[in-house]
Length: 98
Image 1: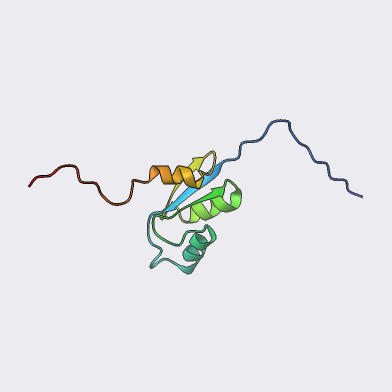
Image 2 (image 1 turned 180 degrees about the horizontal axis):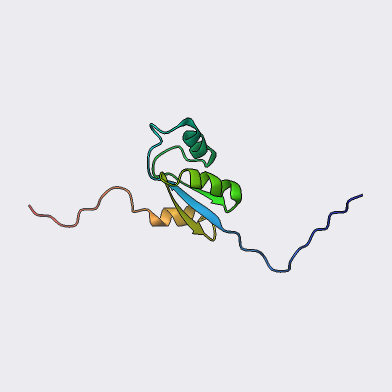
């Protein structure tokens, strides 16, 4: 009978993520390219998703290397951090030239 051993370390292991952004359209590409973008969770231009670093995701990124931008990040930002990077909505009047 096989016994499985689980090894745990005392320190937390930092996991890395791919930050994947679709920069080019999939119009006119083969159907396997479009399926790969959907597998990565990319549906619109300039959409960004975060995927863990593993061989499966690396293979999909390699297939789409002309269509996506990829960065390796330490963690996935939460919604408040993403909202802080956006400029405020609307406009402000700086001065009056009348």
